[in-house]
Image (cartoon, rainbow, N blue to C red; front, side, top):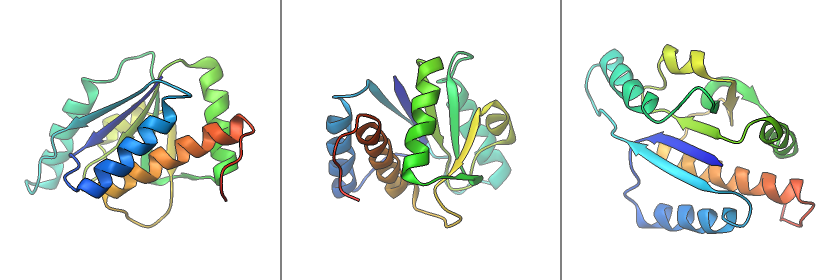
Length: 151
């Protein structure tokens, strides 16, 4: 099972449509759960990170393999990502991806992470990034099942 915990909700219809399309495609390979926690908005940065962290922690447990999405994380290409995901799934039935809010993730969440992953050194809108993540997870399943998918 894959769980994606994300700070903030999707408001734009075109992003909701893309997310639903990838969820539908992924349903053939794995159970997928998406959890949105409230974005604390424009409060003081440290306070927002801690409040969001508390909400995120309610949705993870000690058996989860936690992957945090961080600019400081390790970058992989799609094939490396697919191989890593396959290895993780052999030993862990619950994989949790965590996408932080606009201020990022707390040190506490980062310490719980089993793998710090970066898609780029660039900063992306969190709503759009969720589509990127789902697409890469879908691509990983296609690669790992030796199925054709565009490059």
